[in-house]
Picture 1 (cartoon, rainbow, N blue to C red):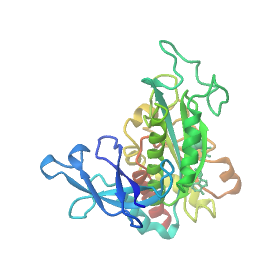
Picture 2 (cartoon, rainbow, N blue to C red):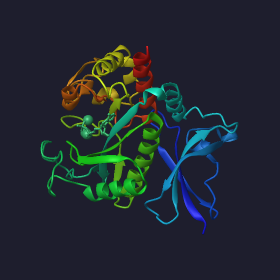
Picture 3 (cartoon, rainbow, N blue to C red):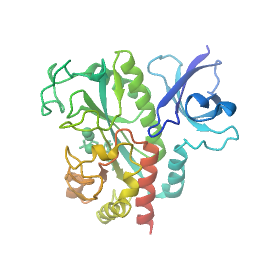
Picture 4 (cartoon, helix red, strand yellow):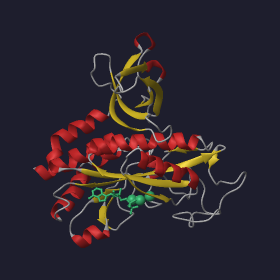
Length: 333
Ligand code: ADP
Ligand code: MN
Ligand code: MN
Ligand code: MN
């Protein structure tokens, strides 16, 4: 039997790229081949030279269609097979090749917000919901909106073989989180992009849209981040490299913040469990610091650190490559 391969790629939208996908029928027994698309419709090419190339980088079972059908995560190339300028995966591949001997691991906490009928899911028409306080890890129909989507999504990630490590309802109404990892810089990016695609696709069936907007509601409501937990083999073994990693991130703090997702100034205000975007700090258990050392790590004197700054709409290939380069170059030196 031929099977359906859903080719997924990242487009050229600025400042925040979106996911696109289309279906190819692949003949019985064949591997998903290199394919192409119209880059003039995705902000990746001019109309007179519109062809862009899709190269499969990760193929997983399609948990929505089932059977022999597949999801095919792709990278975008130019027709001469060089990486397209929108292709940030190559940055993660470079970082992995350069510093793979330090075995960098990433665990990403992807926060997101459900929208229904043009407003955050659970937001009443013409009024306001109860202030945040009961929604985080809440239970009951007065606290929780969209759990059916979350449950389907978690199961789909497992069926697709992704390293999803947990989910929770978040502080703002209609806001949730799932975690992917720990994995290396390339794998964590591939898997997070596939998990994002599955989230959008599954929510479609409920007439709900999932968004990665970093500050969906202004005022006294939490934003949405992509906390990035990071370690190297040295950090997993002793304390000094943990502190060295925190210090190294401080030396290039503004460069990192500038690449951690559009609209980061609106989210990193210093309120709502964030540190101000313009200042850098780190500390044990401190959810008001840029980088947190979890209490268990302080206790064991080894483990990992959490960079709390990346936005929900950050590109995991960019974030993982920057942290790998910044920290591993320091630890190697
Ligand atoms: P939080 O308390 O900030 O909400 P979570 O439990 O949501 O933390 O996420 C913690 C993340 O850290 C998980 O994705 C987990 O896989 C990841 N993690 C655990 N150990 C390591 C490690 N040694 N290196 C990198 N990431 C790790
Ligand atoms: Mn979390
Ligand atoms: Mn969270
Ligand atoms: Mn966190």
